[in-house]
Image 1 (tube, rainbow, N blue to C red):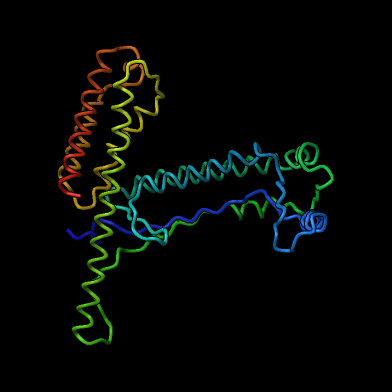
Image 2 (cartoon, helix red, strand yellow; image 1 turned 180 degrees about the vertical axis):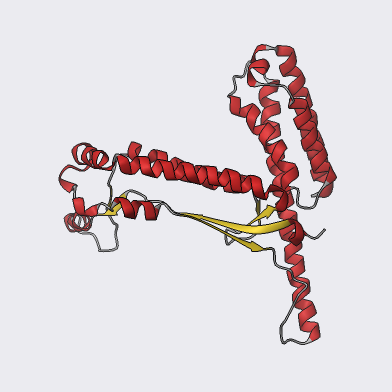
Length: 285
């Protein structure tokens, strides 16, 4: 089955409000006082205390991270490949992240007057200017999310008025580039699996090392995700991911902390998976 039949392209645009504003008066005062040229710099003042914007900013990063995790690289225009197997999971988790962002923006707006007062008293003082602040409606517009889909280009269909040899040359170049993109996407998936599994193996292999629950959850998450993003249906990729999931079946962070034997066995199995990944990558990528 061709890649275009197993995948689509998706681009996620997430905008946000920086909470900053150019203060022209302060900028001019500094430039005049320091005898500097007009292009020497600008003074951007923070309109709110960092804690006020932090939940919304973190939600923006979380949404972008979900998008990146659930897709594969495609080009430099922020288009990424999404497999048909992972489409519904992608829609579910990105919608959850987008809904969380919306909730954090509403939380910001609900305390907007209080945040502005704190900024006036603790941050800006005489630089406070009510006119610098966008309205709640404008804030909602600045925290915008747009998701766009399109099919993977089919380079076999050309309707161009070119000589046959030019068409064949162009098709060959485009197919070569498409192959390179597919190879890079698969390499990215292998690297992600290797990175998380290696970290898990190293942490479990050091009995004195403390670890967070995410160390366990992350390796289970990537092993579960890999088969859904396996664009060229590489059997080795599926096999290793399924083996990792099987080894983790029934294990939880508490067991790994409390039972040295279980932790040692988990470290050994993860190290074997790392060796397997590296062997396949060395031979195929």
